[in-house]
Length: 242
Image 1 (spheres, helix red, strand yellow):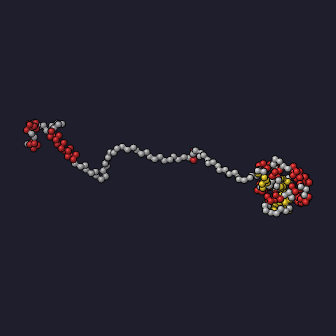
Image 2 (tube, helix red, strand yellow; image 1 turned 60 degrees about the vertical axis):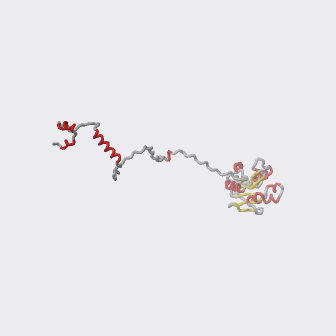
Image 3 (cartoon, helix red, strand yellow; image 1 turned 180 degrees about the horizontal axis):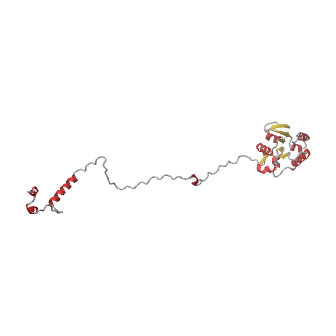
C-alpha cells in the first residue's frame, strides 16, 4: 500500500487508486493558505545583513551629473591677441625760463674756431637787433682780417618777459656744437653769467678746458671809452687763429 494514500481524503481516494497523482488548481485553498503563511513569515523576518564583500545596490534619486572641470586651452604666444600698450610716459615740460635754442640755432655757424658773446646778444638775436652794435662788430671783424670760419656769435642770455636772463648751460652747448676752442666774452654782465661771483678784469681765463678772453663790452666802446677800445683791440690781436 502507498503510504502517501493515508493522507488522502476519502472523496479523492478513488482518483488515487485510478493512478491520479497530481492535480493543478490555481485557487487550491490549502496551497493558497500555505503560500500566504510563508509570505507573511518572510515579510515579518528581518532582512539578512549582506555578507562582507557582497555588492549591494541601493537605488537613490537621480542627481545631476557634475561636468568635469575644463582645463584652460594652451594658446600659442604668436596667436595671442595684441595687448594694448600702456601709454608712454613723457617727461614733464621743464620749469622756468627756456632758452630759444631752435630759434637761435640757425644763426650758429659751424664749425668755428672761436665763439663771441656779450650780454645784449640775446636781444640782438631777436627781432629788433641794435644797429650800432652790429656796425661796431662788423668794423672790428673787418679790421682783424681773420680767415673764414674763425668767428661765430652765440648768446649767453635770452629774453623772458621783457628781461634778459643768463643761460650759461645753453651757451656752452652752442660752443661745443661749433667745435670752438676759444671764447671771447665782451663785458662784465656776460662775464658774470660765465664766471658768477668773480671779479671782472680783462685777461684770459680758463673754463671747460678752453681759453676765455675777457674783454670790455660793446656798450663801453660805443660810449667813446678809448681805454675800453684799446684793451679790446689788443686782446683780439693777441689771438692768432690756427
